[in-house]
Length: 60
Image (cartoon, rainbow, N blue to C red; front, side, top):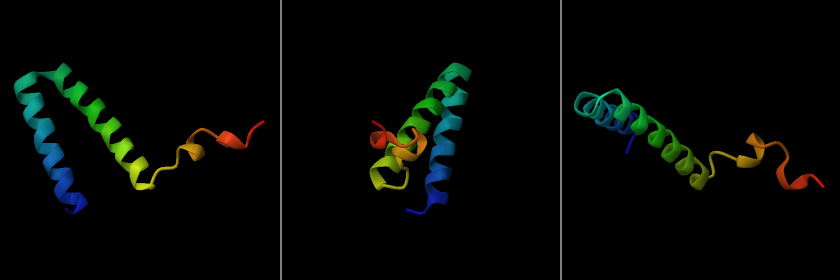
């Protein structure tokens, strides 16, 4: 699946949540979408946690 297709699906889902659930439900869905996206990038190896947290295990 292309990233543009996935973005379209996520956008439609968030729009439906905002329409039916209100603003708080929309914000909650966005937070979980960002967390899920970050976990996906970590599992794919495209996001390195060590670069975000400094040197990581190299410190003593």
